Every structure is written in structure tokens, then in C-alpha cells.
Length: 330
Ligand SMILES: [Fe+2]
Ligand SMILES: [Fe+2]
Image (cartoon, rainbow, N blue to C red):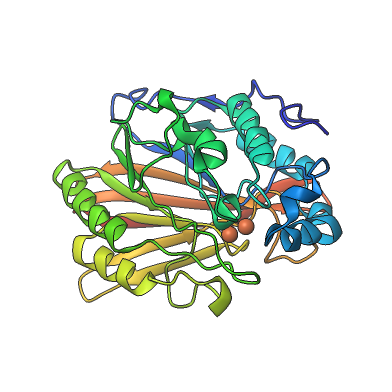
């Protein structure tokens, strides 16, 4: 199936509301998907595979392409399109081995899905698989990644952290993606990105915004196996505990997560999304996504979370978990 020509999903169906649609009154509804791994590697050349990519290609050839399916992603988008959304977050791993051809396929898919005004994304480890010229790979998605202050028309590689304001929301995008040795899928933020994140958290706190921090790798001690871990997760957690945030969202694990980053003073929800495209009989690793409704209340913020999961028999999505939190003002 050609990318951008989706079977069931009508690309004109996704409904986005402008951030000012409700004049700042009432909840803002946003969606979060992750790890769609939507590219097709059928035409990849053997020259492109003379690297760690051969392992990723073999994984796709004999396993991933059978369980990560565009028709499932279409079903998810159909379910999602029944909502009027303020914004869509995509927390990385849109490709399998991050080739330029894959990134062009993703670019086409993104253009069909919505504008950069309505969609924010970050790369995952699969999108930066080997050392490449980023401007030819995930840099092609720069306008969906870049900060509001950056003119992304020049297609420069995006800088992190990114900061986008949409109504009362501060969407802060981080990159944990970097090439790793074979058999490793670790990530790292680096000292500079963490320092810049701290400054952004301070700035957006002063602006009175609901701060959403989006990264690919789960940041908790329990998030990942050793070979898939975020190497400077401890430093990230220290920064968040020092400067606060209202919500942390991530992907990478391909299963849903509902947890908290806690200290004596703070309790910050950490929500992970399953892979958007997986068809699996496993109930924990099956296609799903999250909806968040965020509303300013006198005490601070109300956050309602609904996680939806594919029901294989019914070929539809249903509520997996739903809860509401009241978060104090920053
Ligand atoms: Fe992934
Ligand atoms: Fe990943």
C-alpha cells in the first residue's frame, strides 16, 4: 500500500480546532500517539544496509512488517477522527531504520494528516538509526518539530528542546535519539539539552502554561530494560523535580504506561503510549493511543486521561483506562 494513500482512513477527516476556539474557557483536548513505525522498506537497496541497518531490516523483513501494520494505523486514525482535537502529539519512531526514503514517506503521511500548526512530534531511536545527515532524514519533518520561534522553511535540522505554545499549553519536545551499537536502543538527552530544558521550564512556568514535556524514551527507573534505557534518565528526573512540569509523555516501550514522577513536593504524571500500529494478541502490546483533556481550574489544572486500545474481535477501539487528576498551579 502506498504511503499517503490510506485504505480506510479518510485523510480529510481529522478535525483540529484552533487553540483559541473556546476563548480559553473549557478543556483543551489533545491526542498522543507513538511508535507508528509506518514506513515501508520494500525498495531499500543492499548498499543502504551495509551498517547496523541490516539488523533492523531483517527484523522488519521477518517480524515487524507482519505486526506493525498500516491498516491498523488507519483504524486508529479513524477512531481518533471522531474527536475534535486541539493538537496531536507524536512521540517518535515513525520509521524502522531511519533511511532518507523512509523519512520522505513519513513526510507525505504527515502532510496528509494535518499541518505543523496542529501536530508536534519528536524523533525516536529508529528515526536516527545510524550517523546520517539529519537534513536528509528526520530533518524533513522540521516544521512539525521546530519551536514557534524558528522559521522551519529553511529545513535546517531541528534544535532541541523545542517549545511550541498552543493556547494554555507549552509543548516542550526533547530528542533522546542517537545512533547506538547493534542490539542497543538506548537514548540520551545530554547535558546541554537538560540545561536548556531547565530554562524553558522556568520560562513557561512564569507564563502560567500547562507544561507538557515529550520525549521518546521512558524516563522512570522502571521504564526500560538496560539495552533500551535512557542513559541520563536520572539527570532528567532531577531537573524535572527541581523545576516542575505538569505532564510527561513518552513512547518507545510499545505498551501503555500510567505512572508518576514523585518527590516530597511534586507528583507529575508520566504517561506512555503503546505503538499506534501493532496488531498483537498480547493485551499489553496492542495498538492504542491516549486522549488528554486539560482545563484550568481555581486550584490549578484538571487533567483527564483516556487510554484507548484496539479490540481485535470488534476491529474497533475501546476505553482501556480512564482517570482524572487535579494538579496544583505551578
Ligand atoms: Fe518503537
Ligand atoms: Fe524506540
